[in-house]
Amino acid sequence: EKVGRINDRTHECSEDGIKELAGKMTLRASTDMKELAGCDAVFLSLPSTHEDFSAIEKTLEKLDGFYSGDVVILSTVYPGFTRRMQGKFRELKISFVPIRTFEGKVVKQFHEFPHIIGAFDMGCKVVKAVPPEKAELAKLFSNTFRQAEFAIAGELGEIARLHGFEPAEIFGITNEGDPHRRIKKPGIWGG
Image 1 (tube, helix red, strand yellow):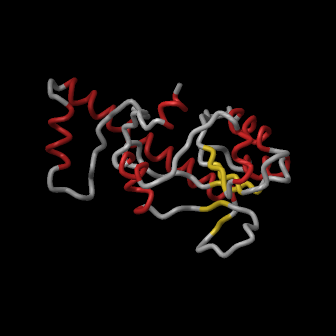
Image 2: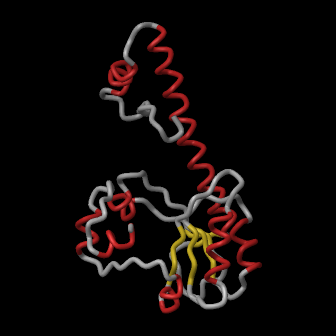
Image 3: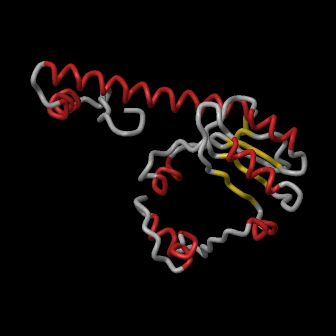
């Protein structure tokens, strides 16, 4: 059903700028992984939890044997996972590129933020590549730092409520005119 909505351009997406970008691209969705055989690269942005990377590994298993291009893991994984997968699926060229954009802002921030490329020998010139473990750690550090920001904001919000104030009002007063201290608004993600 979702594939059909993507192909007939009726699928709704909350990302800013995605409709304009999709209008400039030839985008076609499919449930047949064999259609990836002729692609230059496959990007895996799949669910992962603190210890469960099975969706990524199962997808690599499905690609192994018929696909020989680059496979780029975008999901959060532990250091060493990319190297372990490269050892297991030797026909695939696996790298790790942590997505460092914010939900709803990916299209804009993709071109603004520098990218970390965690790769083995890519066989081409790159601006800067690091071993996958360094890229994996950078992604974990980024996620942990962001979660800590939201956790602190949540605690500060509770302190404001204990004193009978709305957290948003206190955050607004604190943040106004101060570019160095931007208390995050608590939310669903890490909040």
